[in-house]
Length: 112
Length: 114
Image (cartoon, rainbow over the protein chains, first blue to last red):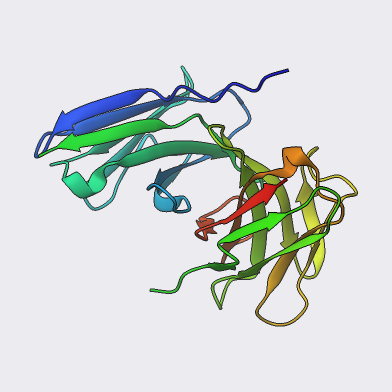
């Protein structure tokens, strides 16, 4: 049969605006979450992570929010820049193991 | 800033041939991983490796696949007899910490099986 590629959700923002990228995860046992940025032709680049004993974690211009009740993760990027344009993936894992399970990704486009 | 490196960037091979994909993890990292991404699909876990042993492997990582740390710096993924469906981007990752934490990815090797 045919394999159908993912149709990525897209988010288009103006330079300087704040961006919020959302992710739903499925495994209730996941207790570690990580956001990656992937530019075209490159590997996933670590942005920020969070453990399940936290609800919020801040980095430089980025904040990750975790809502375990509804199994939802979000990445907020402040003052978005054209260089932020990329596909953003959330990934989940269990700290008892070693595998990360990736989400489908969101294409962020920043318009100058 | 230290990075994971991978060679080659693109490998073309014929079905049934063996390929070896190479990775140099970040130098003070002890935990190594391979993932793959078929075009247009999600990144998928293949295998994790620590202390010269496989720690965990996925259902994808069957007997056609093997991993090795042949020396103090390289980490390799071998596919014994490639199939068309092995065509994908293969990413190596490494971590200072055990398990799922802070895995840093290389740029990938694009494998095309014809």
